[in-house]
Image (cartoon, rainbow, N blue to C red; front, side):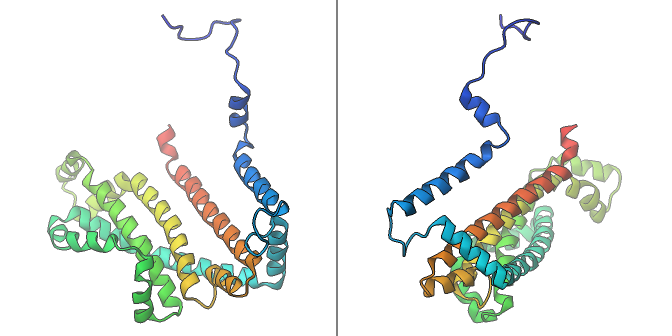
Length: 269
């Protein structure tokens, strides 16, 4: 029979060095440090030509120069404006449409086939069409983000509503709730966890789609900065954009995870 608890004074099982390493708060920095070390080693030993792979020190110096000149902040602020403008519109419209689609079987029978066809279309493949419709101005980039956000949020909300127990709606019938009260008091509180997950995934996807769109057609933004660096054979500027894009994406995801954890703190009690 297995003991339910360790007796007082009994020897506790020893943890291995690997387990203690993984439990340390700084263990998350191990993989970035190893990647940086490998990158530095590859440039020092000239495993690849300097025109293809620049050193981390050169990338850091270029990032400092771009920051001091103000170019990096200008490109970054433009990209973040496009992201949050399109993300906000996509979230609101996706949430509203997902609720309607989940609650109305009539609407679902009409638009479900078209909705599923459109959501399967890669957002990048629609960039030429969006350019023809909106030009290469700000509207094009914002609506690309709206498209990337809308379908993820709408599908997540729709699936969350469809998975709700019928008993929840029976409670609304018992209390004679109107349709609006059912949405406010039953549906929205019940789908919050799933909706937050969908919004977080949509945020990460929208950021990647936006940078890709800026690479193809833009006059400003991080993607355009990387494209100009490529055209001028400034691989250090390209790598600055790559690193900044990754850091921004990581920060957005981690920040939303913290917000999600705060909003769902009641589940831990």
